[in-house]
Image 1 (cartoon, rainbow, N blue to C red):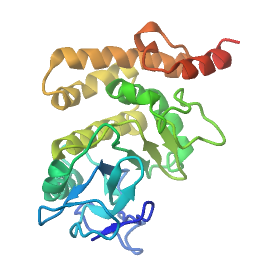
Image 2: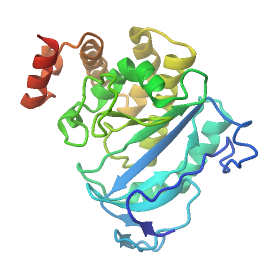
Image 3: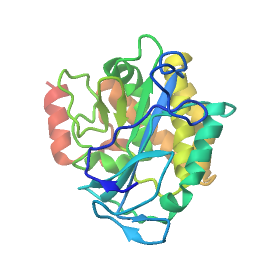
Length: 282
């Protein structure tokens, strides 16, 4: 597989064994949840150990990625297929983690800096949540957890619009969470630098999806459910995890009540604050 032009990806939906679903099986073998990742890098290190970043450069064949492409904001990006999203004991998770491990050299050795992002796209096949706007409406308040993990990215120009996650008829692309026809794109996460990061994000998003759609619980309960995930993500640094969870409360208050308190104010630009004052304080 070579590096192609930006936006040329055509992902396949994979089954729980990591095989592409066919027209005959795609309507009978669907999982409840699916996920996709964008792995943005400054360059890829291919199988020969060569750094490549130009259109036409050879990378390698891949079962995980459907495309390698150029990216104006960072350099290049690898776009995964549409992956089944399952819990800890699921066959889907076991198979997807094998695919992640196959790409460990590329993910871990290819360079990334702060310009690079790690967009995550999620979708749901459960009735009532298939359409992107329906899933977005269900997820929006729980996105406070994602906000708390990556607060400094709220001011980036690729995420700065509609940070209140309002339900708008013409949803701006460059917002922390973008709505598409049958999926939701979470644009806030930073770059995926290691295979462990992509595994941890897979597990975290499964819990967020499960406890939003299948077994809805309060935000306080959700924080308790994901605390073990955050401990893995932050290297068992309890003070960092508590900091994130406390910050999540501030962002949850913002998303629910449209009020920016002092705990989160510093993560918004003056222009963003002016917009929300005019919208919410009239």
